[in-house]
Length: 120
Image (tube, rainbow, N blue to C red; front, side):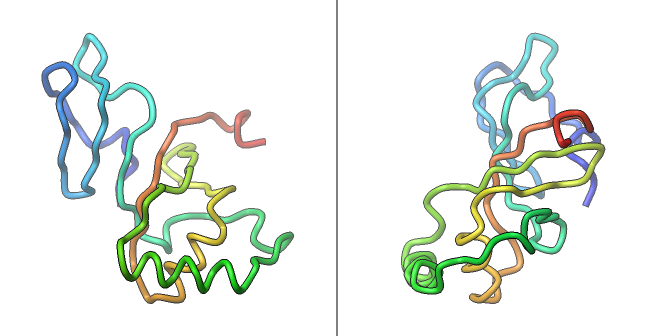
């Protein structure tokens, strides 16, 4: 999947954006480019989880989320940091695992761009 920076999206002010990634954003800058966080469905296998080995999830919470997601879908996107076209997730661990255990291939994300310094 290409980084968001490589997906050209130029639309009038404050319009909903739909692309093959199902990207939505409420703010468009004066030059027509996306500004601020972007909501998109990303493949689970493209999200790096650096804290995966340092945490364990509550199995009951994951089970409850699985039921909820199966019934009504994900209600709150997970936060993702995009750095140089790579996606990093540090929160939403229970929601991420629930999606994995349900066999879903994508998850709704709130994506913010960052630098390597931000990532450190």
